[in-house]
Length: 414
Image 1 (cartoon, rainbow, N blue to C red):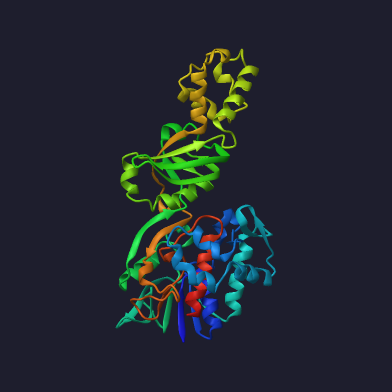
Image 2 (image 1 turned 180 degrees about the horizontal axis):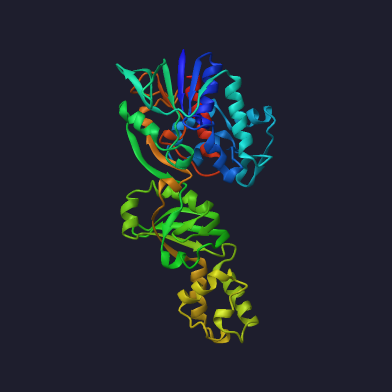
């Protein structure tokens, strides 16, 4: 059996290895001059290669069509990829949130290991080669057409071209065009794990401020519903908000009913709890203590112990308490306003950043048209899909890379 795999990322490499181990003759076609270029940018160059939780729990971390991956996750687990790394001398470690990294903190070690396994399996690699489309006759795969119009015949094709995020690594949406051309439905392409655009009047003043151990709640104020809650780290930017808890929130938000209309009508609000460890009563006592210590100071100079420097002017302005008012003159009602701001700091969300700024792509080849047990197309015999080109996406934490390995392996053995 002759198999052509389009795309040499983690999904394409695992698909190639699995197919070759199956006894198939495999050609791996990659448009870049190296395999796994996108691996080098994952985990800020350290490569968060998977997550250490039980594989049965993975689906809960895949808000984008997680149930579709049930068989794939069973076929190739997080243990399998860790064992593959360790067998090749790449020791791993587990960090916060059960994230698994190479001990070396080098994404290149992960990339090299997968490349080494591809070469060891005797797979023919065509570098710097672009595929224009899949050749189909009578709803059956016949081969691929290269950009130089050369035709390569084969029995099976696996499309593992990635999504549209990090386009500089070669993920430019080629697979969507190929799939659509042969009759597949492409679900709307959007960025997931993407920063959020928010009220610039507030975020602009706080640009560059990173907050740790804060709690967020994103609400649909029109329907009085909480869309997402999280605790952790976030960052203010010139356009709005970023950081781990914001990126994870985007994966939920983009699937929320009528989200585009709600954003346009300014009905999505983020409420930030700057002091989640303290109840309102405890926070009030804390403020009273600080105010006793600074009783002869002006209000604007009394919040140094309570807040990051960059945030003080914003809180002072929003509290509508005169900045030069002496602390010992601040009323109980005014203190309540400060507490309300610190426990429910409101920021209007206005949109998502572009897919090019996203960590992963939401949308892609419709899961309704793919057999979840084999990753084979239900429309074209002999056509398979793997990785981000499929309409599946997960939270941060190594889950998206595991999707790539598991779907790649499943397509390869099938």
